[in-house]
Image (tube, rainbow, N blue to C red; front, top):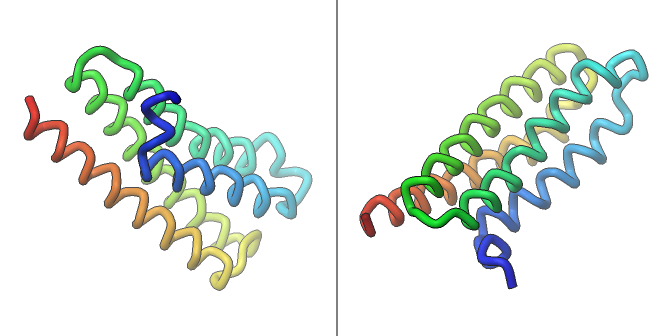
Length: 119
């Protein structure tokens, strides 16, 4: 089994990707190459960077990839806020996504702290 698959941050961020794909399916067609593409790209970036970092040889490299994942979570947050402001996404539906972002961020920061303490 690949090391990233045991990480709760990876598992939850993988679920987030599926949620983002589901919610963006109902966005306006003209947003396919705009907001939809950007949201999906940012969402996919979170678990893929966790996976790539976990496969690296050093903890320092892993931490760097975890920080990239954190940046992608912030990007998703902003894009979701914009989606709500443009009425592409309801506040109710976005609430669960914002909650997921917060939980994943806590897991990633916890993992970073754990890895830093092991250096």
